[in-house]
Image (cartoon, rainbow, N blue to C red; front, side, top):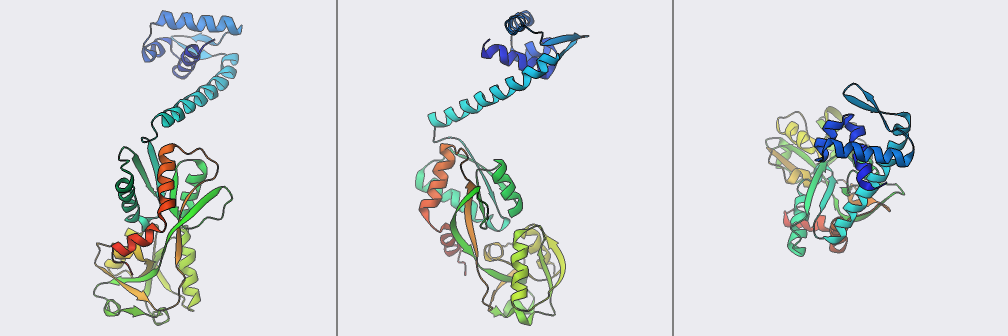
Length: 304
């Protein structure tokens, strides 16, 4: 038994057709048939049964396929990891982040390229809710995430900075002319806020409760851009992370909040103990060693 025979067997099992399998494997059908016959003789069982022009797995074949698939998957994973070690400067890095960080993440990558010169790396982005980010991290669907702190023993993280909360209003709103506002004076306003499935919604609700305000909510959304658009067309006003509002190209204005509201820490997170390619590790270590890059970004952008 050899790896070639196992790949041949798996391909036939997937296609259920010798001719199609031979074409996909780029070998003659007779060579493929001989290889499977030799494998069946070695195992002492029949792996396939003819069914018209097609074939299907026997009971023994279906039993054996499960082990073959898992073995080949492990070997393919090992080969992929080996390539990473051979060429650690290459590779894909998958990042997930909150929508309020859509300007910060490209800045972070540009700084990484500038400092390290590792322009061969390829980045993939997913803008997600904090709940989905957690699921992606634990499932291995993303390498690193920029999000609020997560209470989970399977996730490690490091702080990269913090967000203040500000009030966002249409530019022609009376509050736009004010330098700051007391939230307790906004009881007559209509608010736009985040969907209950967003982690930030809990934080915003706590902010309202801390000042004794029960807001009239007219609109809920998952993403900052939708909230900004709704504010711009006078559907209401909104509390948002400062980075989201100050990068806005919408017809809105940001107003500082006078009330003592706690900032929201932003962390870079990763799954504890999961294999990390050299490319991902290089980027993770760069962020860890660089300190609070989010605060640096806000300073460069003229943030408050």
